[in-house]
Length: 113
Length: 111
Image (cartoon, rainbow over all chains, first blue to last red; front, top):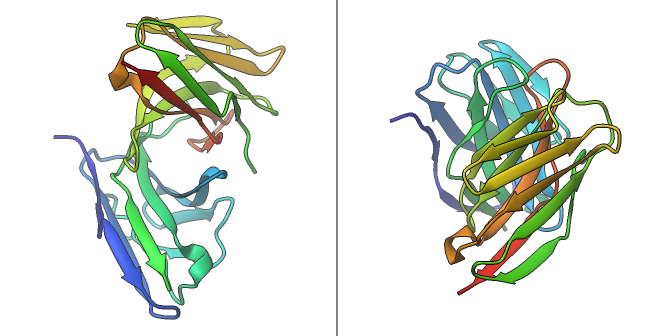
């Protein structure tokens, strides 16, 4: 089954404790992206990757890092999480090109206290 | 920055009625897509309309695009309680794969 998986699905952590949210897709997609969703703000793109070893900032990259060492994986790293990073995070992937639908993961709800 | 802006922010209708949601955007686009999100879940792609298309249908969904007004509408006909969800428009850039999402319309269909 074609899918995007994220882990963990729920995470409560404390300020400053480094964490990684994993994202994996089994569709051989080149393009992968991370979004955060907050009430009243919709989905905002954090980082995206056009292919292996190619990453670029989205609209709200501050406080986040990503890496793309393998085509299927695109982890999101919070080196020193802060309470304003409490949010619902989504990973998405698609084939390259502007006219392809994006497939979304189920989401990771992160709470930073 | 948010490209698409949906209107209304919330819509409540009775089962069987039609639901219309609108989306406006600011810059030139290659395509416009609509996604659906059930509460707390991932987004699911519904339909894509290219910039050179004016109308597209998929089952009970009808999408229109007016590039001169930089706006799109999503019509769901004969709505069902299961259509209750948030609906987002997303605009595709003229190059690349990046999508920019609006804030969404929360649709509630009452049985």
